[in-house]
Length: 560
Figure 1: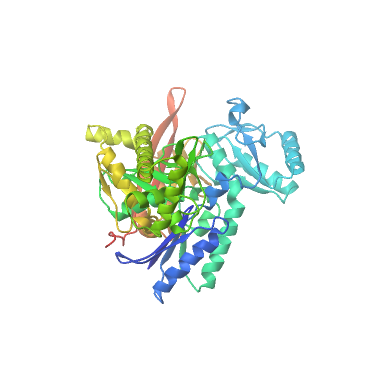
Figure 2 (figure 1 turned 90 degrees about the horizontal axis):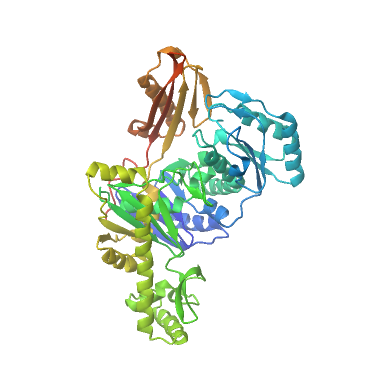
């Protein structure tokens, strides 16, 4: 049996899945001040339904890291950058407490300027006096040679053992120095709180007598073991929207072009599926308006949900963006989007009389008929979602996969349908689909599709390999491995491919995902000749091999 739990901003959903059926589903309000307790309440209900059956895997999707960053509750963190001789330092101002250090590595991994030890000593002293306990370090081209980052980390720890240090070569081996620096900064800011959460979850699972795999859903729609996530908490950012995207796919596996709209209590998350495959953000996840090296879907969240407050100000009716509790029909004090649709469509959700009372009270203040008021609000909500989806297509058009689809199909992209996720989708999405003149899918399990998606997605993994035959070395990520290259002069592209496969197999074995190694594919293959004088003196290979997001082999769909 499999368990998937999605901790949303308003509700936490869970499913117990076995074979091709959802055995049990649970939904609870999310306590933002105690995510762990909310999650465990849902888990305990699902375990009751499972009885003595063996739980093979538990996958969690949580908003913890997203909330830490969005609310500014991350720990105060300093950043030491070694950008070398390139752009002005002002171009790299990532955070208030950013320090610049002389010392540089070139793109081949050779030191071109040694560390300024006197400057480093002054920076360490300044950081110590500031009281900062978290530090991120990023050196340009450290993915070719991390010796500067390692030396700076060692110097900091010798002088200030109380400071926790994260270095970018352990976070990402990709090029693009600013994104790697940002990723490391946010990792340092959230790593302790994430590990506290991981400790609590492990202890709680152990206390329940469970000996099962615990995985975390990542922003790219795949999972990773909880233990691995301890070093890379930022990969869990936006795992909620990732869960809704994979949940939409899980409801109906086919190759249609679909927009997934997950209408939660506070926000609506929107993503795109092209020919049965989610569209990725080619520039990585965007956190606080800064691009990172976190692989993520191309998506957008808007402040429109079932609990969005309906309010009146200066003869204008507004929807949200604020939320002041649940809908009136569920015991809340104010009219919400859910109450409006409940009244307008006679849905009979919760205590419908309370919806009616809240709407009539608001209509009285606005000097409007209740029916006219709700009709206007319904139109506003549908139009806002429709406009956002159409705006998103202008952004999606710049993504490589979108352009490739149009080239292969020799026509403009055509949307086939909208998949509705969340409890409120049944009311709203058909109207949006009608306005956009496309089909829609509202499944019986749409209200818990996020948890379903989390329960049945497979682990993902990417291996990045860089080979320099002239300098006789290669580097591999994950792991930050740098090794000597044997018989460097004889290497061909196929040799590089085989080395990448060897390392992918090794990491898959370490993470218990051997069965998916054979389903890997190359997403990057580049070969460059190094010329000295009139002859070739070596080659540079850059390869990327990945086990892409998808579903576990046992998953063949869900029966109603």
